[in-house]
Length: 349
View (cartoon, rainbow, N blue to C red):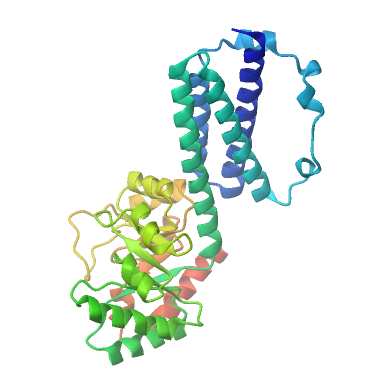
């Protein structure tokens, strides 16, 4: 192999590895996200394998840093970074540029290696999106702790009264979930909730239906495992609305992160009076997700004031409830009490 080609491989490989290490340090120490950190670490190992066709000894022998004209070329912007996120963005860009260079020049020497590097480049785009979506979700939902699911109620007046109580008590998110109402009535109920929540800090999410979320000007949609994909929902909702996903295993939670979800629901934790499940992964799933994932995650399924302590002990300070609030004698008081306990748990972290 020509010395010039070896020098290109050496420089590009160094850039890619160095950029990956910077990204990994951000994921490990800033996001504190074990899953994304492990994905980055695996990426480094896969890159090493993809470059195995170029012996390290040959690359080192061809290296000539002192005579490299590029070492003396720089711009003022390279010397400054505004914040840790700026460092992250710069190094993802450096990684992808280096991978492209490795891919193109590998075509001159080993087409199979070029294809491996091409797939790594695509993977870097997925990882970049997952990191940015996690970071954005953490920012947007930083203070969001209590998520209430409700149906359309018996009539609009009853629904309006309930929603006003929930918003007044400080519910962070309301999800409209009703499998029985016709679309026209469901949309009318969604618009009613939007009217009540507008101007407040309470977000509105529609279950399953990104089309109705757009028509009602809701803040997002929540998807089950058998519903539309995150990708398809985004095509309808656009890039700014929230997309949440229900997850029932650690593998599904990991997939939701890589798919670009803004938050996840995790459960079912306990048996519920509002929805039937064949299996309950329980508190052990909460513990597993809490240990790995920093994407905002809400424990869901049969959570009440009586068993909330188990949820908090599992590392979750976000919950999604239904009957514990909507079937309470005073839904507003139920919201206030749950929020107070969640806030206390956050304070003690």
